[in-house]
Image (cartoon, rainbow, N blue to C red; front, side, top):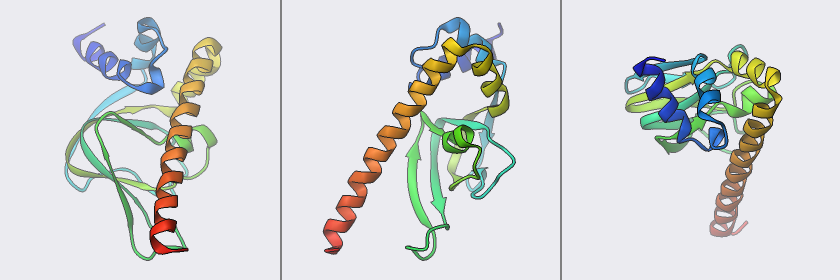
Length: 160
């Protein structure tokens, strides 16, 4: 294992997605990972994309999560995310098109996980698959709870 692999394992080990995965299993997953260095305005994920289901981990910097797909808002709806966040999990899990664009805000460092290779690995190693899918469920549940809280705030403040 080279120094680059060890650095990626350290990044993966910090994520909720892989919190219960062993170092040896992370060593296998590193084989599906690519380090990325991107600039301000570069796009990690394009809204409506249907062909590519990779996962992305933001290691350093911040991104904007942008959606133009809602009939309820005009123009872009933007959320900011900071480092150590995961992107692309919904499309990876469901096989559906991307729900938002993820655009770099300044320079960032990220890790791309080949979604097809990870899916195959988890299928071939169901013990790891169970652990990772449980983590994905927790991440999605946490995000839904945050969204629910924001929606309640918006509804309360607008008097709807």
